[in-house]
Every structure is written in C-alpha cells, then in structure tokens.
Image 1 (spheres, rainbow, N blue to C red):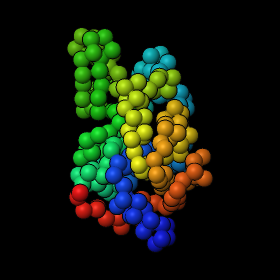
Image 2: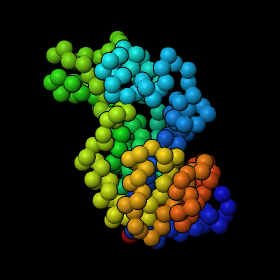
Image 3: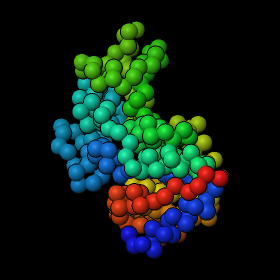
Image 4: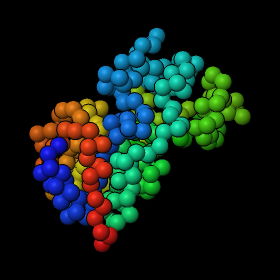
Length: 245
C-alpha cells in the first residue's frame, strides 16, 4: 500500500455518510481463525471427506457424528477476540459513519467488537437450535457436548449456520440489499468474492466509491475505485476515526 492509497482511503472515509463494510474470512485471520481458501485454510486440510462435503446439509443429516467432529475441531474458536479491523469498524459506527456490516463470517466478532448493525449472511456459530422443538443453545453447550449434541427433548441440535446446499436467510438477504442500496461507500475486506449468492450482492451497490482491500485478486478488482492489495495490519492501525458529526 502506498501513502497515496492510504490518504485516499482516509479521505473517502472522512467524506462518507453511509459506509457499508462487506467482510470475509480474511478479516478474522488476525484473530486466529483460519480462512477457507488460503494455502493454510480449511480447504487444504486432510480429512476422510472434503470440508465442502462435511459442511453440507445432506452430510449433516446423514453423518452427524463426522460433521460435529470436524465442526467442533475446525470451526469453533471460542477464544478468538476482535482484531484491529473489527474494532475500527465498530469505532467508526460510533461517530455515525457506518450504515451496516455485511459479513460472510460466522464467528460473531463484529458484534463482539461493538458493531450493532451486522448482517450475518452465513449465520453464526454462537446460535444453535433444536431441530425438533427449536429450543436455543449457546456455543459452549455445543463445544462441550460429547459427540452429537442433543436437546432435552431428544431432538438433534443444529448450528444456526448456512451449510452448503442451504439457502441464505431471506430476511438477512433483503436487509443486506437495502443497506447496499442506501450506502454511498462500500468497503470490501478479506473475501475472494467467488462464493455466491453472497458475492453477487456487490451488484446492488450504486454509491459513490467501491473500495476493495484484499490480499489476493478478486473478480471485482477492475471495478474498484480504490484497490489495495495488502495485509490489514499495514492499513487499519494507520487509519484515523473522523470527528463525530
């Protein structure tokens, strides 16, 4: 990242009135949560089945024991804390700059940092429910359960996350689209923008500035008004919070 890029990013943030952040797995890697598609990510781990298969709806129903073995081992990071990116976004909201945060992440770290208007496209590991009576359970119950977690009624508990083969929550989808349509700035962080339908939401943004900050190339790079290929640690500690309006 050049000093010019940093200055331009800061100016865009300073002048914005309704920023929407769109975050992917890369945002949480500095919190100790591996992403899915990097060389060290979950997709490169060795299991009896590919991770894409294990975290699918049909596999969950047919082989819940293997699903939960993988899920508890590789998708629950209960000690993870918000990092500089999560905190900057939350602090920016406090001065009235942020319209909302659309995230593909299921770790709940945006909310933990203090963001209040978070659209979790793929759900959250923090919420779990009985498939029979719909009783809610926290993530600690899931983590500490032996094998497949069951409800007191005998029903199997499912994480409130969107598995492969499942549709996105319609309400969350509609609210995300509305936020994008109202935004004057969209800042995309740490996502490959290849997972649909989530990645396709970018098309609903028609505001003034599209900013892409990512380590690697994305299919939307050519459309960005500001494109930064760098690590978040080289960017966010250098950004300032504008004075509250």
